[in-house]
Image (tube, rainbow, N blue to C red; front, top):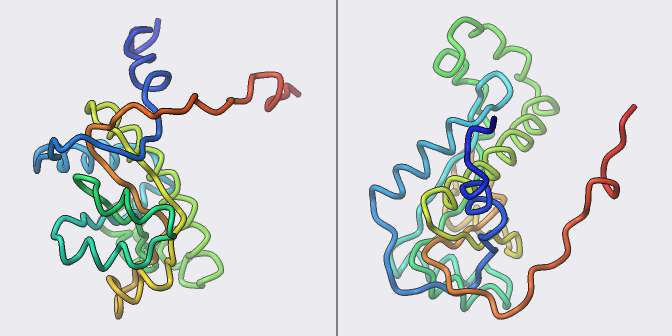
Length: 194
């Protein structure tokens, strides 16, 4: 028995597409809060939750962001109802007493940047997947992008902070893409049993 019906699984994984254009319908404050809540329910190592979300809503902030997007991503970012910059806290380990109180002393294992940054990168990447799934589960659509000048985004939005940005996601009620879904690998293509 599955947790979701086959119809729900189809609605969450098979039907949604990465979208580039959205209707004018806004994303509500309640939807933003639910996206965050659901995203942070997914597992991360040590329950670390290093992902940070910056909602880009004002026209002024949007234009500042658009200037750092690759040419092909500018127009759709300017027109999206809501855009999020995903980053991770490079000092995530200092919150061990908050996210894993019984193991607060484990923060010492991540004092060295060589351990801390890869762990932050991996776990925030996991959370980015949960973020996209949460958006879909709430009936919205996502357009994730890595085509941006992230060093410029960090200077623009995170100067003096410990956040490292890695993805920009447009969010809203998507318009159906005009192109076919790109091929997906099958079971035999990407798995082996040992």
